Length: 111
Length: 116
Image 1: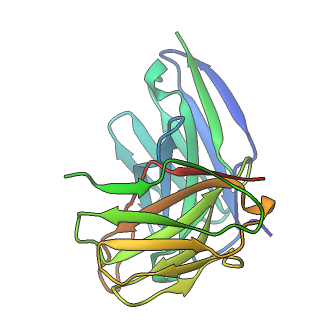
Image 2: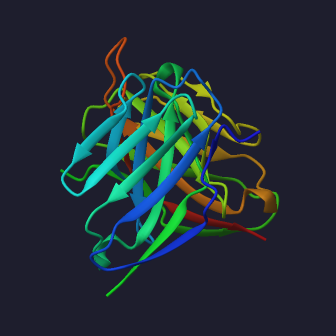
């Protein structure tokens, strides 16, 4: 049973437009949610996080929204740039700071 | 400051062979982790350590062993490799403070392992 799901394996967006990546979870015990970005042949790198008691966190072009009643979070990238093309993973953080990752969404930003 | 490094970058094993993957971090982090990444399944936690001399099982520990003899190193061992262990392995480390969360994990570049 996957506790964190990213139902869209891929997303294609035009440069300058908004990218919206979605994530659903089933575990109500997650304290934080984190987004990671991964380029080919590299390890994931941290992008942004949100506490479970917040509904929005913003960092430059990146904003994460959390809807606890729907058990849904989303990452908005505005404006999207070609360098944002990567695989994005959402993760829930539970007890002991353990992360449970979704399957990832491949974002392609076209120039 | 190298961050998290992993050795080797690539390896091909035959079924039944053994090997050890080495992870090193120079950030003085207490927590270290081993993940495997398979297509469409994200990263799954194999084992983790909350400090020198401690280890614990993650989501998919079977077939793997780990050791944390020094704070900066975390070793992942495969005693008898199987084709199902073909994967990309990532090590990570994090700073953790009791009772808080949201600290990012820093990942190494990965080890691509193929078991024939």
